[in-house]
Image (tube, rainbow, N blue to C red; front, side, top):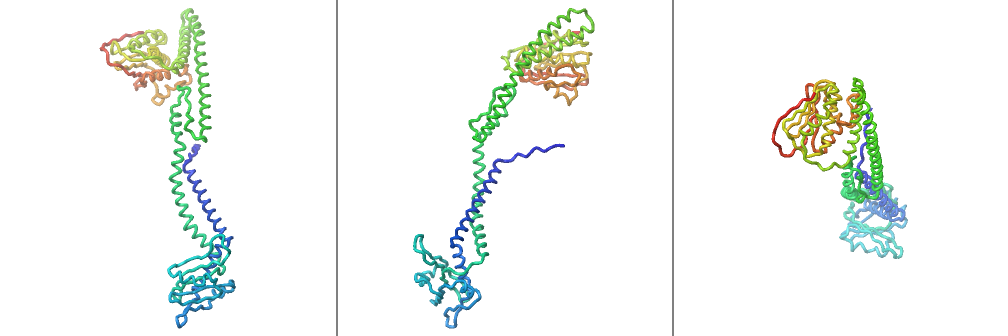
Length: 466
């Protein structure tokens, strides 16, 4: 059963959603508080009650036969008089007809004459003035034509009017303001987040360069926000612990390899003094393999240190020297060992000891896995190419990449440590070259390709050992 990895969330969009929610809540709360203050202060009720009075008068006003204004006794007007005992109003048209009921305050009695060109007005007093009645003036269209109504506080407004007013405020004010705030948030938040987290890109790029061979690498904290700095510090402390553990491992491997070399050499010397036999030959092979393993452990440490200065060298000389040194081991194991070259010299720039160790590992790998029959051939080409070929069972295509991994073995019964081919690949990489396993009908062919300087004079030669 495969468990899907959790989906990473976007900090930018999370902030935008939360900011929009907070803005909408604060804006709505502000409007509610304003409406509540108007309601409990009586101002909202005054506005609505004036509208109730004007609406009742608009449906009740009519004209007499002589053109004067009259008011019919409608149910709305009767209910208004019952709820507002001190009801007053002034009705006036543009022809000068006038109708008054109740006792209008003197300061509002003739103010309508000056407001012919004003459609709607609320009239009151400044803050701090003595409390006095307010008034509302509006021109309305009625059965008697255009009528100016001036009135004071009127009847009780239905609750629906209050709800309708609240909805109008939200639709006409809250939503447009919220839309503007949302647009500003959508534009500003990504910019703010990107600016605040600019340093993360630098840290991520530095983290990409962290490698086991680059000890002491740490992530920078100078550009980090204070909220992210503890995470970067924790990663740096983890890198410090890894460096310390890696250093201890390297020292252990180096010390172990050095300590093994002496008893291996003593054991090999003692075995060589024994009378010749098949068992002696087998033990010598095992001792040689053990010595190779110790050398490979030391090679690991050499590779992890900074490589020395490369010098000009001859691949033909290296190949010939390896063939001569390993010929006895190959012959004792049942092989013939051949050395071939297309030229007398093939110059490259590199580390002689490293390239010789790489070639030795390839030949030893062929001795171990070549089936103890046939010929192992070392071939040096003209373009910095070295082939090591055996006539053994070969390597399946799907396993060719895996054999270069450290401590990788083709079969559990293999007696090697699985370090030889890994070391070869690392040495070739240090020289800027490549290693590949070529397709063959029978056996295995490892090809080293190294960069070469300008070509040298051509010659051919071949030797056969075995």
